[in-house]
Length: 577
Image 1 (tube, rainbow, N blue to C red):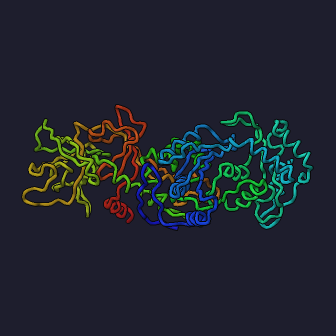
Image 2: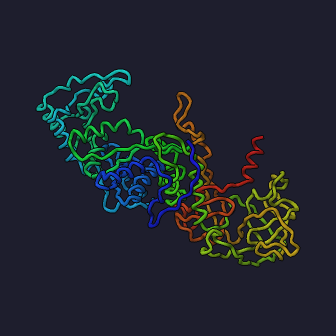
Image 3: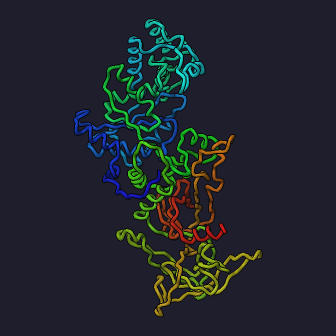
């Protein structure tokens, strides 16, 4: 499955973008509103597990849940599924809250935790035991798997399945009291060991974990499983449409079974396709391996698909929301091109990012016939897409820096930048003609000399009307700011990073060139006050964002996304011959 651009404009006050073409979930809600189901209410929720950082895949779910509720005048809750204290941390909770807010979405006062409902969930478990619908099982985890059966063979009933209600109540209370060690016993639902759906074969409801919870402390040593917690939490919060990804489709009968057996309010679970991006892994377990293994600098490494990572890289929340509104919602898992996400980022930054000049791989350019000591202030447009952005002054002097790639002593065909005897335009500056070079002892060009045409100030065409085929950017050497610039490529080499050779780990597909650090970049002086998160278009080079690593003595910038560059494609083609 592929997706094509269909730009959408973000809504006001940080709301999600207006709905794109209708999809099956939206149609379900429209039908429910027509029939008066749920009293005309639309109430959704986003239920993250606090065991890692949110990634771009979560953004699709977040925007879908908040977007549908906003469209129909409903509400959305944020509820943490904090049922596994061994993997959960307050750090993850705080990062999730921060990133949902960064996306521009507001849950008002509806922030909840599954742990808020632990007492009620326990009481409902007791209710199921009394109804003969749950029992305490002494099988080990391995034995439970052996008894479970396969897709083609039914499971076997546990030898503890027919314990009396009184014995089950006693054992469950003792489990809660901490009498038994981890893994010694579980509470299981009594459903159907012959069911074709493996999730219905007496699933575990509670397990023993003597672990301190980040919110409830040591109050509990038994914790409910996700499948048991999910539906009842939705019921408590009076959710109407419980939207989740397709891997939970086979869990829906169990979701329904629990709420029906308990006789409580019944939300509707609806499954949709999860986001898969080329060259990207969206498994929290594998992302954690990358962090713990030192393959990246942390959860917010700009190469990571986490919201913290792409935020640090310079992606905008508006671009993410527009992307999510346009990639579609279906019942079939597919793959979305990473280039489509970059398209929306580029389109958004094109409208909002100020233009500046920066030289990433500096080469000295000396304008021989320009007066020594003279400095002129050239007018430069801040953003041609936004007249209100105005203009700025850029200093021009005798010695400049240009990009090393903008000069070739022996230029190939179709190369129209600076070379001996050739004239080019310096952006906002002058027309200059290369007159010579200076080389080091290795024969490498270290300095280019040229002459300028004074009649072309501001980069304007000369009186005789002659034209040049190339315009290049520059920075005045005397006024340049030192900077470190980090260029990012895809973290993985393969479109599907999860595909590996037999015996290989997914890390075998890591791209060794995913980060290139340029330590000697030169920036125009207007960037002196660039604070972390400030976004710019470095003219002809791409969009860049100031990194939190910046210091007063040296700026650090991350490349957010490159510009589409015809010459880069030509060079790539030439190298491939």
